[in-house]
Length: 422
Image 1 (cartoon, rainbow, N blue to C red):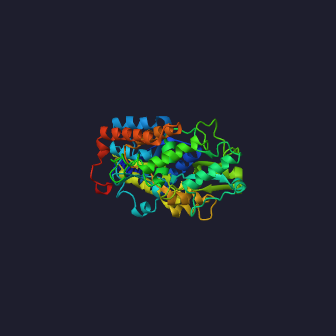
Image 2 (cartoon, rainbow, N blue to C red):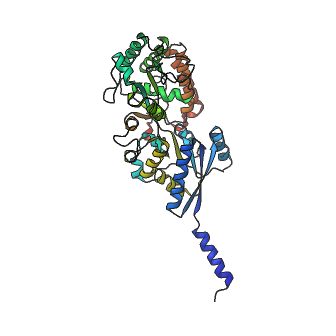
Image 3 (tube, one colour):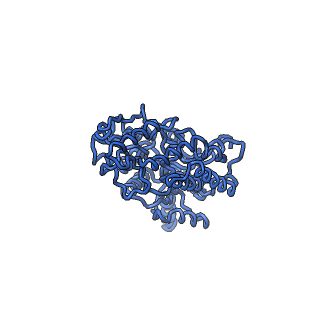
């Protein structure tokens, strides 16, 4: 007969064996809706199975990157971390996160739009649940008063047509500055908003074939043309160099507002059926917009990668993508999940933003050089806005980017090889 001690010990061992394994997750502290959606997703995952238990720690956004860097130096990273998608290559290059290829279900990955993926050197390192979309806002009644057509997905404004419309609006005397370009926004906004103009013109911030060649790309004739177009908007007083506030469109002082889908709810409630949501202008190769927002990756130090992968697979499942969109209002990153949402389903009042994300989205260059590249491009565009010629400003951006690449030995990219060959 077993002793009472043996029975208790056996029961204790069994209970310990049955206890779910903890998966630690770090994310940055965001708005109430985002935090509530994240909490609900974690609770659903923890209820749905008993093998893993996800525990989330929210870190203030201002110190988030520093917290990750400090934790990495002492080997204290959690299993899962949130990353802003343009920074994913930096985390991968530094060795903080592992490739997700083979860890997540292929059918779920195949359904994701560009805004749901983060890559480096041809490998997947992060997945996301949502995106936003750039758009050109105006009011139907104001366009009609000027005899101006509403741009559509099938017939966007060409860059030349858009400039002519702005000039016509200026001449009408109703708009001192017809176009609001979020002139008070700093940092990543400039690259997020205006690098797609380069891509629409058939060029880019860098050659994505090898992620090494900048000269002849960022300062190509096409890029200089876009830069000069941008500069003319301010020179001709079609856009304001230094706006005093961010209310020009809503107060009727601007005919157009070039901004993101984060304005969908506010402008929809304010203007109702008079609001029109249009594609950005086409510089020759179709409208383009930036892709991707915050995403999730698995750290190399994670001792339970299969548990972390199970959690990420849960987050990118169709029902979870739809639930995240309904709670946050953000654009879902698969067609199947969009169909389940209130706003983005076919016929939904915000469906057009999903269509923009599906048709026009281009990820920011998947290189650890991107933060330096973005900063150099921002400086160039600020200089152009202040009156510097685009050729000179973009040449300086090329030099700054090439210097960063040289200092870091190309971040693992090899001359003469395409990204597919790495």
